[in-house]
Length: 158
Image 1 (cartoon, rainbow, N blue to C red):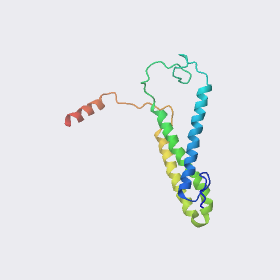
Image 2: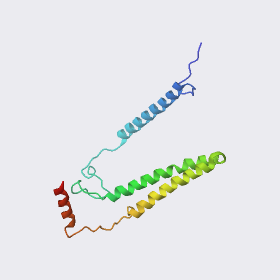
Image 3: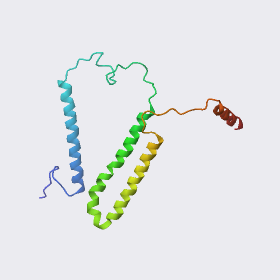
Image 4: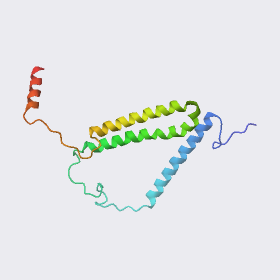
């Protein structure tokens, strides 16, 4: 008579690992559904016009939603994400470096120095370009009409 192992037990077979993950996923969905259902039953429901308005940092949302946002918000967020994600690579490297130091320590060290120098060059480029400045200077445009004359000349030749 063969003994069938319980689903929750640890198994060395591949299906045992999938079963364990499936059980965790199902328990997660049941827990989330149960929590949302209980919250819906016990929470008060008294909507009012003030509660149904869109919340915009404490300000009343007036005017059109089609407004121009300054691109600096996106640039700063993008630079933060790029450099933040790159710093994430430093932690696993620092953990593994001590174990690999006697064998390939010099090679790994100089790889990280090259990686950090590329990041430093990127930061220097962004800084020199002025994209980290919140308030930028206005660029001067030609006022004598030379730019429009050059555009008209280019359009006529094509």
